[in-house]
Image (cartoon, rainbow, N blue to C red; front, side, top):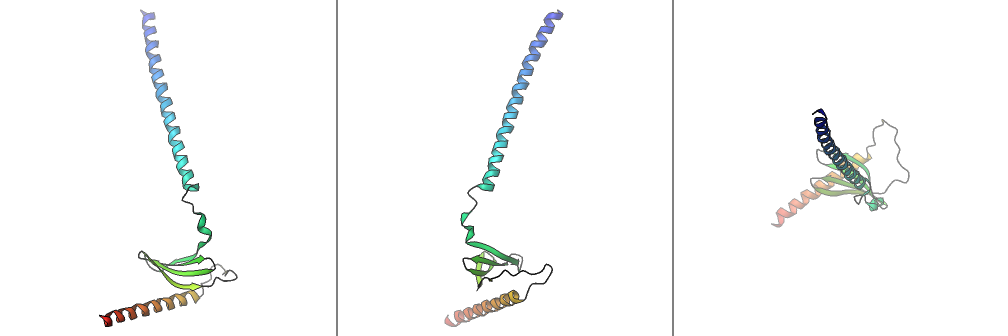
Length: 142
């Protein structure tokens, strides 16, 4: 009786261990496939078609916020710098500048010069005057 019981136990235990072994192999295979998918997604993100080759011609030189959703951005395009107002779903050209012949290097901690602030204020005044004239012409013509 003891031998028959022992033989049945080893056969039953053997089938359970084979089932666990197959389940373990399946789980490891699944983990390998998931790891390969994640690695491919990472590679596509780093090297994929989202990288634009044409960014040599367009470069953001500087950007500063002027409101919660508004920014003033200086963009280098070919041999010009464009001062753009960005906000509210619109991009407005405020000014066009010649790029400096030598890069302006300011010591760290020094306050920036007032030239940009004065140009920006001047551009805002000019845009405000144009808007007022447009409103006056629109009212007078109606």
